[in-house]
Amino acid sequence: MASPDRFGALKTHAQSLQEQSLRQMFAADAERFDKFSARFEDLLLDYSKSIIDQKSLDLLLQLAKDAGVAERRDAMFAGEKINGTEGRAVLHTALRNQSDDPVVVGGKDVMPDIRGVLDAMSFFADGIRSGEIAGSGGQAFTDVVNIGIGGSDLGPAMTTLALSPYHDGPALHYVSNVDGAHIADTLDALDPETTLVIVASKTFTTIETMTNAQTARKWIAGTLGEEAVGDHFAAVSTALEKVGEFGIDESRVFGFWDWVGGRYSVWSAIGLPLMLAIGPDAFADFLAGAHAMDKHFQDAELNQNLPVLMGLVGVWNRDVLGYSSRAVLPYDQRLSRLPAYLQQLDMESNGKQVKLDGTPVDEQTGPLVWGEPGTNGQHAFYQLIHQGTTVIPCEFIIALNGHEADLGHHHELLVANCLAQSEALMLGKTLEEATAQLTEKGMRPDKIAALAPHKVFPGNRPSITLVHESLTPFTLGRLIALYEHRVFVEGVIWGINSFDQWGVELGKELALALQPMLQGKISAEGKDSSTRGLLALFQKSN
Ligand code: F6P
Image (cartoon, rainbow, N blue to C red; front, side, top):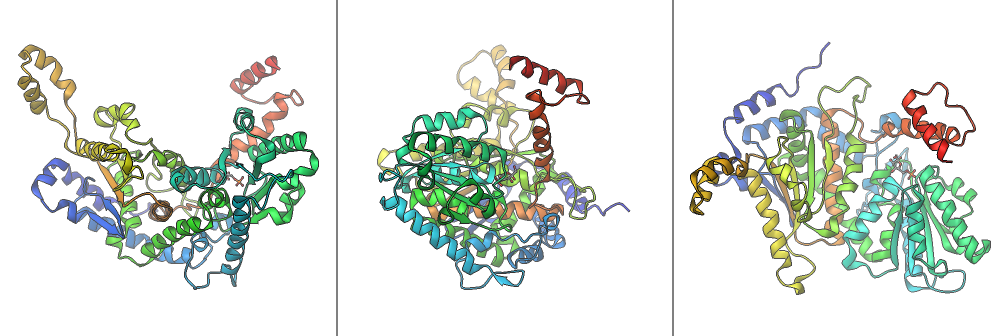
C-alpha cells in the first residue's frame, strides 16, 4: 500500500505561494520579521527570509506533531533505545546534563559515571596545564596532538578554533587523515620532549587513527625511548581493552559509552583536547550552553522552539520546494570549521534511504551541507548563489559583538556584509532596476541593453540568520546543540534512524580487501576492469 502523501497539503500550498515573491511578502507585511523570528536567551533565529507564510508554518507544525517529534524527543532524553539498528540509546544530552535528575539506561543511572569521567578529565587537564603532569624528561607539555577522525576529530578541532580567545593551555594539533603527509607535517614542527599525544577513537579500530597512532608511537619511542611512551600518550575510547593492548596506562584512558554517537561525542571525553586548551571551567560553560539548548528543546512550545523551527524550515526547503543543498555561512572566521563539522553531523545522520522499518523513504532526506565563512565565500562561490540556476538556501551565523573591539570597525563591516547578503538574496534586482542604474551612470542605451541582463538578480532566494551576543564557550555549546536537535527533528519527520552510519562501511570493507592486492599478495581477478586498471598503475609504481 502506498504511504499517504504527508506533504500533499504543503506542496499544494507552496504552489499558491509561487505567485508572490519574498520581496512582495515583505512589502505587504511590515511585521514579517516579528512573525517569523524566534528567540531563546540572546539567540535569535530569523527565518522571515524563508519562502513561507503563516499557513505553511501551521501545516509544518502539524507535520511535526503528526510525525511525533515531541514523543520521539522525550524518548531520546529518557534513554530509550531509539537507535534501533544498533540497539542503543542516544544520550549525548546526558553528557551535558547539569540538573540533579538521574538519567537511566538499562536500569542504571549513568550520571555518576559521566561525572566520574569529567572529574578525571579535569584532574588530568589541570595537571597538564599547570605542568604538574609532565613529559618523561620532566618538561611541561607545550603541545598536544589529537589523533582521531570523524567525530573523534571534527568536534574538538572545530571548537578549539572557535574558542581561541579562551585558549590558555598548550597548543593543539589535530591529525586525522591516513595520508602520511598529515602526521609528518604535524610532528615535523614539534619537539617530542614536550608533546603529549591523545589517541581518540570510540571503537579503537579505525584504520586511519590506529595507523597514525602507531606512527606517533614510533616517533616518541624512537626519540625518547620505549619507556617514554606511557608519559607521552593518553587515550579516549569506549573500547578500554583495546587501548590497554596499545600500551596506554589505564590512568591515562578516558572512557565514554556506546550511547554516545561519534558525531555527538564532543561533550564526552572526546572533548578532552578542548578542555586542555580552555580549561575545565570554560569546558563546563560549553556543556552548560548545550544543556540550556536541551532544556529549550524539551520545554518550548513547538512554534517557539528553535530546533523545531529550523528543522521545519529545512524540511520545507528540501521536500516541498525541492532544494537539494544548504550552505552554512558563518560570518565568523573562528567558525571556519563549523561547515565541515555540520557536514558530518547532518549528512552522516540524515543521509539515509530507508525508514526505521527498512522500507524506502517517502521523501528526499538529508540535503548536501557545505559552506565557508563570510566574507571569504563572497569572493568565491556566492556568484552562483546569487545568479546561478540552482537555488541554495543559506544559513548565516553572526555574533552581535566580535572579540576584536579594539581593532575598530572590522566587526561592523562583517555585520554589514552578512546582512547585505541575505537582503540581496531575498530582494534580487530586476531588469528595470539594473537598466535604471546604468542609465543613471550615463551609459549609452545600446550598451545598457547588452549589459543589463547580466546585472539581473532573480532574488526570492531563501535564507535564515542566527544571531547571538558573542562567541563564548556557552554560546558555542548552545549553537552546536541547536544544530544537533535540528538534525533530530528532520530525521523524525523523515522517519529515519539519524544515529547509525552503515553507509560508511562498504568503502572500509573494500579498502581492506584492496590493500593486499596493492601489495601484490593476492590477485585482483574478479574486480571490475576500472579497479583492475587503476590497481595496475599503482602496482607498477611500487
Ligand atoms: O566514518 C565512520 C565513523 O564511525 C564516524 O561515525 C566516527 O565519528 C568515525 O568513524 C571515527 O570512529 P572512531 O571514533 O571509532 O575512531
